[in-house]
Length: 130
Image (tube, rainbow, N blue to C red; front, side, top):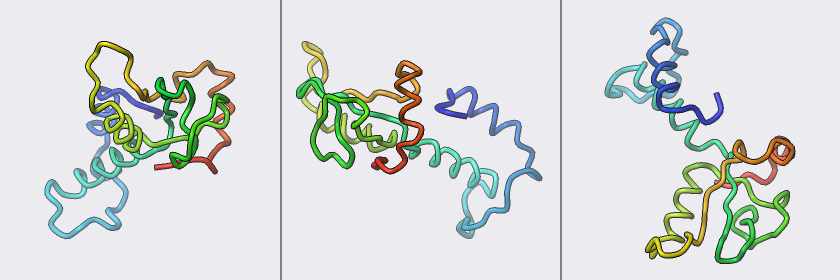
């Protein structure tokens, strides 16, 4: 499930029978909510940190490169970032956003790109950041 909606996540979690939840390897003793809650937290964390975003800079009119190491006008050289890293970067860059002009930095999901461009990112595991 790539970038599921909250409804899809809720249904997925609701529909998992406790006997089908994998063994809670690594679950801390006394985890609040038990092994099922721990499993859900792990899945949410996995989805939040999967790298599937690019960052467009309106300020530089270019894409962020991997590891926040500059900018490129060629989208194929753009860095791939996790949702969490993208939120941190864009929130920090847009701290003074007033709504009177476009935000300086924008997150762009790879899944939202035109299919031929998005397909080129499928093999770019080496450039993931965050």
